[in-house]
Amino acid sequence: MITIDCTNALVIKDQLLVYVADKLEVLPFLKSEKILLTPIDDSQNIDKSLVLSAITEFLKSVNLDENFQIITKDNDIDMVPLDGKDMKEKLEKHGQSRQDLFFECTHCGFMTLYEVEWRTHKLIHYI
Image 1: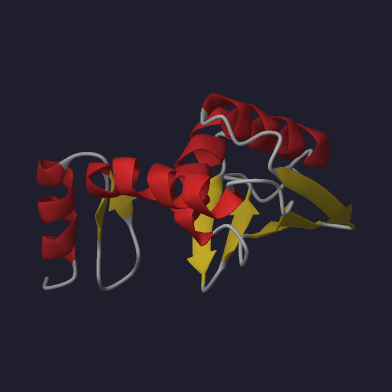
Image 2 (image 1 turned 135 degrees about the vertical axis):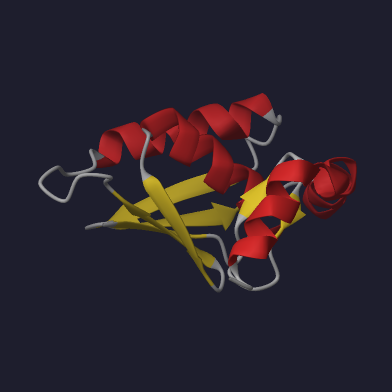
């Protein structure tokens, strides 16, 4: 299991979770400000270098690659924002532009881009 600490990057945490999980085909879990990645098959391991590559690709895709430093220790990855010029405004702008693209389950944190899938998922909690 690999843990990505997004305490200092909460605005992009949800999009990062979706991107990394889709790219690596792993099971993601949200735990407060952290993303936990586990392999689909318990007999496999997740390659940390692939996770780092996926994080870097994501940051480049949203033009934030120069604003974060990625620090690793064992299976923990910490995303530390650099106090560069306009960092706060850049994160807020990105958060506002992407905020309404995701639907999140209030029961378990499941997220999707599709309202129909989100509504169907919510029904599972009441069965």
